[in-house]
Length: 158
Image 1 (cartoon, one colour):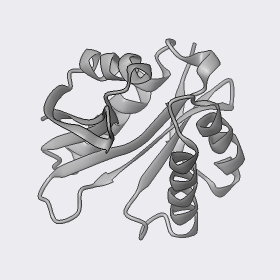
Image 2 (image 1 turned 135 degrees about the horizontal axis):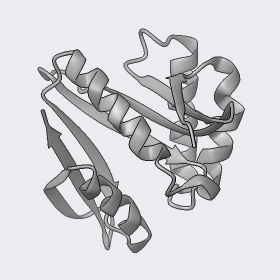
Image 3 (image 1 turned 180 degrees about the vertical axis):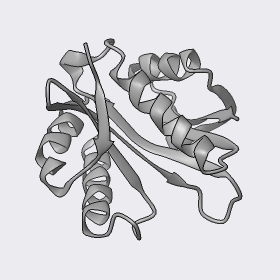
């Protein structure tokens, strides 16, 4: 299966939001924030502080990733959002997107990438995915999002 990755265009929003809404890990409030970020990027891609890429399989959007430089840092980047259509998970789409993002970050003198996620049991596959991509847990804040829902931050250095 060939995966192509390109910058998101305004016309991609409906397909990306369909994937976001189909991702069971995202809560309704998180879906709203993801949409706000997409709208912000769509209005002003260069001034939004975000970069959003979409993955295409057979010319259909199969996933997206949103990332950007961490404000007030030197060479630190954040991956804010990442989702793959549920029916296409496990086929290398996420790995392809993340690998491309890492290459772009290194090309911009990036030193590290941080990815924040939840400790909830339904995020175990997500955390396993990050570990397989060479990310390490650098901090863990108990009860950050809610009681029993810890914040886990993964890091990869270049």
